[in-house]
Image 1 (cartoon, one colour):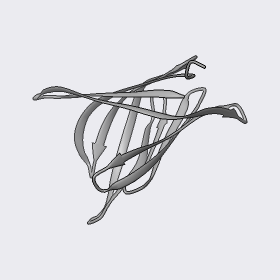
Image 2 (cartoon, one colour; image 1 turned 60 degrees about the horizontal axis):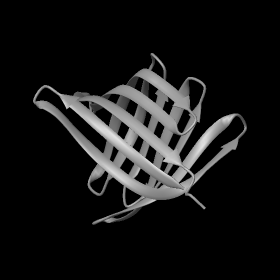
Image 3 (cartoon, helix red, strand yellow; image 1 turned 90 degrees about the vertical axis):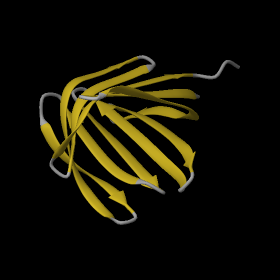
Image 4 (cartoon, helix red, strand yellow; image 1 turned 120 degrees about the vertical axis):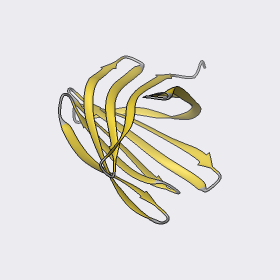
Length: 131
């Protein structure tokens, strides 16, 4: 399955877009949708799981980068971002969370260690490979 992860970060200085194209898999279980993929960074391989259910989502990353980002529409939630030199507390305030066929769209304000890090727009599109 082809997965395209596009993150646009809006900050006072302007905005920046990061795009990642990976192969992964999609499945549904217990009323939630899951996407799993791996990306290879300089630090090593990062395994990512994105779980989406009606008005909430969770992004888990393991491996070279460890991260837990929970989302619930119109709610502030705590998460964590583990780096080699320590664990940072994160906070997400979800403004939009949509999941349709082939698209996961999350718009959220992101705070790290109590400092606003900008508004993040995460668009994940995915489709089956043509046979």
